Amino acid sequence: MIDAMNHMGRFGWELEQAYVVTTNGQNVYHWLLSKYIDDGDSISEGFRTKLQYKNEVMDNDCSDMK
Image (cartoon, rainbow, N blue to C red; front, side, top):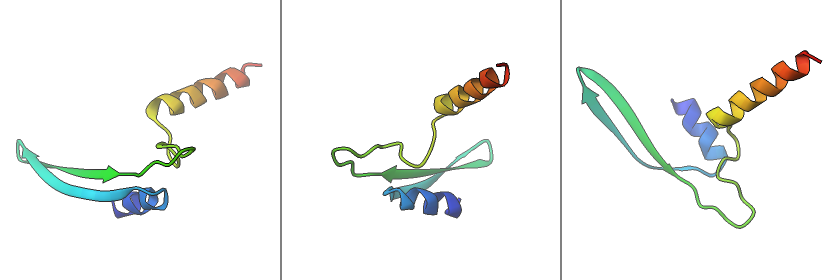
């Protein structure tokens, strides 16, 4: 998890709060991050969303068929 936090920090994200919720004897860790966005900045800089990833996979699969 520390590697993920370092990665996000390189793109301007800051840790606001971290907490644990225990459900059915299992700990679930929550990390709340924030990022200040200037004009021209992108909130998703440095990572892909699930939809972006799926679209890239579909594009690659379609290009293999040509």
